[in-house]
Image (cartoon, rainbow, N blue to C red; front, side, top):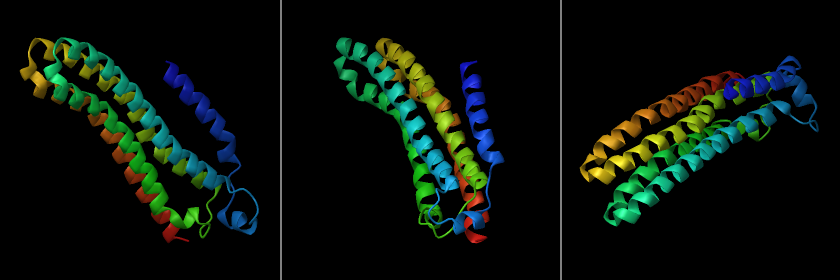
Length: 196
């Protein structure tokens, strides 16, 4: 319920910006003016990395806390515990790749060679949201699966493969969010850069 309320507030805050969208030609004529479309696009790229990394921070710390308890009893399982700790950390990489994709693929926009409107900036921001939100939420849930897996390893350390498989199923949805953001950014690029 909190997530729905937060997303509603976020969408409500962006609504006036979308209504006041300007044409790219108008932005180009105001050389000294702030290009709000570019600001929104950068905000989306920043959110992709920040929210994904924040989810990974939560996930890795949760798994680390569970692993510390297991290692006090069975220090020989350190390699398996570290492997399980790494899994929730991968979501931060997905967000970073999307941010880098924006920086490298939209270089003409960033350099000021191509101006974008506010509505185009909103579209780029929205294209970054799937990876940001899926990675933010999937990493802590993956950490819960990994933490539960630590209890399985405490009883039988031969179950590592099963624990990793269960944790990988949670990460599947972060990967789907990554792919949607990836394809959205790539498909919109043609409309902005090639058309200009």
